[in-house]
Each structure stands twice: as structure tokens, then as C-alpha cells.
Amino acid sequence: MSKRSAPASPVRAKDRFLVFGAPDIQEAEVREVVDSMTSGWLGTGPKVARFERDFAAYVGAQHAVALNSCTAALHLSLLAAGIGPGDEVITTALTFCATVNAVLHAGARPVLADVDPRTMNLDARDVARKITPRTRALLPVHFAGRPCDMDAIMGIATRHDLRVIEDCAHAIETEWRGRHVGTFGEYGCFSFYVTKNVATGEGGMVIARREEDAAQIKILGLHGMSKDAWKRFGDEGYKHYRVVAAGFKYNMMDLQAAIGLHQLVRVDAAWRRRREIWSRYEEAFAGLPVERPAPPDPETKHAFHLYTILVDEARAGVTRDAFLEAMTREGIGVGVHYASLPEHPYYREALGWSPEDTPEATRIGRRTVSLPISPKLGDDDVEDVIAAVRRSLGD
Ligand SMILES: Cc1ncc(COP(=O)(O)O)c(C=O)c1O
Image (tube, rainbow, N blue to C red; front, side):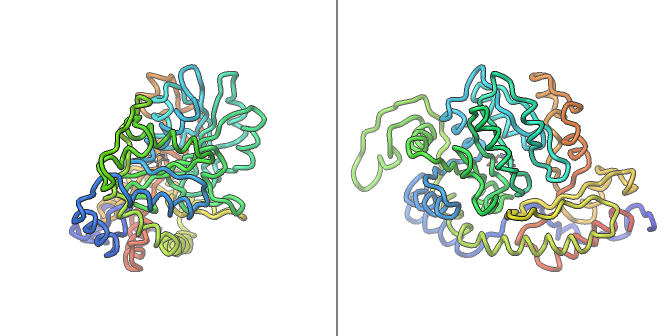
């Protein structure tokens, strides 16, 4: 293997930079958004209601409430579960800051467990070790679209009488033993952020087992106004509402649902394309000095949301950050999911977290790189990513 510094000309010219996680927006979404704009009903309305029904049917949930983000979904699920000051919620150290920020905004204390180095998901043995008399809930994150071991997590929850709220931001298509994730816990929280497998720009959804929980989340998501307050300016005439809680402004707009409705129609086709790209990467990177993601586990469906490789300087001959820079120079957008949470100054200072306490998450967070896996990528784009990875590793 010959080592090289910056190659003479990049794999892609600057004006063809391949943006990481670009959404695949098609004509149907464009027409639906235009329809909302010409109808004049931009805010929460009938398209949000349709998107909730379609999404609930897709994941096999009884109830779904659309919100403006997964962060909002997590926050309101925690509140609806009665989690608050004095309570501890156990989650993973390898997740986006939103997961623990939602716990903090509910007034509770997030407690980190380490991850299994193979699956990068919560290590159930460490979860069990982190339980104290104050533990009230578990908040598993189905990292990269791979389901957590829900038998182990639900077993712990049952034994210790804990609530379970699932962070399914990466996991719209994910199944554990034939059942969609998000339906194991009392609440499942999904994201439709731009890079997600169903994108609405910003957006989120909570699925809930009980109707009364979904109703409470709906109320809390729109200022705490009584049921169906979004209809107050509709063609049935003005409807009075009553404020029944100090709620939040977390509602989804019809403009967002207009995009989501059509993204959801294509979610399985997009998943098949993600799987194809994943397989091509697996084949192309087999001989390279990087750690590849573990294959999907039997009896599960992986959402293929992220394809992550680990770049270890000792093996690859290049640091992770030098690799990120080289990929950018080659015209390929890359991501880091994630630096483990204790690497961030706020959590170290406010909560006393230290990277040594969750060593596997720290090791992964310092080496990980996410490569583009959007269904928007053509075969040529995928080959460009592969060529750029090889060159960035000096291959
Ligand atoms: C694991 C995880 N949880 C929560 C969120 C928050 O989602 P949103 O941006 O929709 O609030 C994200 C977003 O990237 C995420 O990756």
C-alpha cells in the first residue's frame, strides 16, 4: 500500500460536492407542498392527521402524534411518562445530544451506560449495573438503524418496574424479531430531520400504546390547549379552546407533513437502495485497514440509516480527523455519529461525566466516520465514495 498526501485532483470537482445525507425529494412531494401553499392551509391540519394515520399503519402502532422534531417527541414522552426531578433515566453514551437534553429538560438526570462494541447499541449488562433506587426509565437508541436487544431491555424494565421510551430517530424501518421498534416501550420517538430515512426538513413523531398518552402528548405539543384546538380556524366555524396545561409549541405543519406523506410511500424502495449501497461498500472495503459495521443480526431488520467505519490510526496509518479532511478534499461529505457524550464540555461540567466511564463509546466516537448512504446516490456517486475512501487511506 503506497501512502500519499493530497492527491493532484479530487475524485469529485468542488461544484459536484456530494452532500452527506442529502434527502431524496421527488415530484410528488413538490406537488403536495405546492397544494398546501395554494390551499393556504400551511400549519397543522388535515395532512398532519393523514401523516399520523399512515405512519401508525406503517409501524403497526395504535396511536401516533406528529411533532416538529424527535427532540420534542422525546421531551413530551418523558413528561407524559411522569419523569421529572429526582428521577434517573439510563441511556447510551453513543447518541446525539438531543437524547439527553430531552431528559434534562424534563428535569430528570440522564445516566449513561456503555455500548456493546459490536452492535454499538446499549450494553444491557452495563444498563443493569447503572440501576439505582432513583432509576425510573430506560431510553434505548437504535443506533444507525440497528435494533437494540429489546428482549434484554424489556426484561430489565420489567424486573425493575421501569418505563421504556425508545429513541427511534435512526430506526423508521427497524424491526426486532418481526416487530417494529418503537412499539416495545410505552413511547417510540422518530425523527424526520433532513438526513433521516423519511425527511420533512424538521419533524418528529411519537407513537404511543395508550390513547390517553397520545392525547396528552397532542395537548402538550400545542400550548396545552384542549383537544383539536388546531381546528379552531377551520371551515366548521370558530372553536373555543381551554388551556389545560402549560404546554409547548411543538406541532408539525401541513407543509412538513406534505413532504412526509410521499417520503413514507417510498420508504421501502429507499430502504432497498440503502441496502444495495451498504452491500457495495461491504464488498469494496473488505480488504481495507478499517473496521466495518457488523452485519445486520438475524431476526432483525436494520434500517441502514448510517454506514460507519472505524479509522484507527495504528491500523489505517491515518488519523480519523485527517481522514475526514481528506474525504472533504475529495469532494465527499462525511459525518461523525457521534463523539461520545462525555466528550462535550457541558456534560462534563454540569454532570461530571468522563470519557473513561464509558470506554467503548469513547473508543468508537474517536474513530467513527459515516459515509453517504442516501437513496439519492447514483451508482457513480457510490463508486466516487469508494474511490475517495481508498485514496484517503493512501491505498
Ligand atoms: C439518536 C437521535 N436522537 C434524537 C435526535 C433528534 O432528532 P430531531 O433533530 O428530529 O430533533 C437525533 C437527530 O439527529 C438523533 O440522531
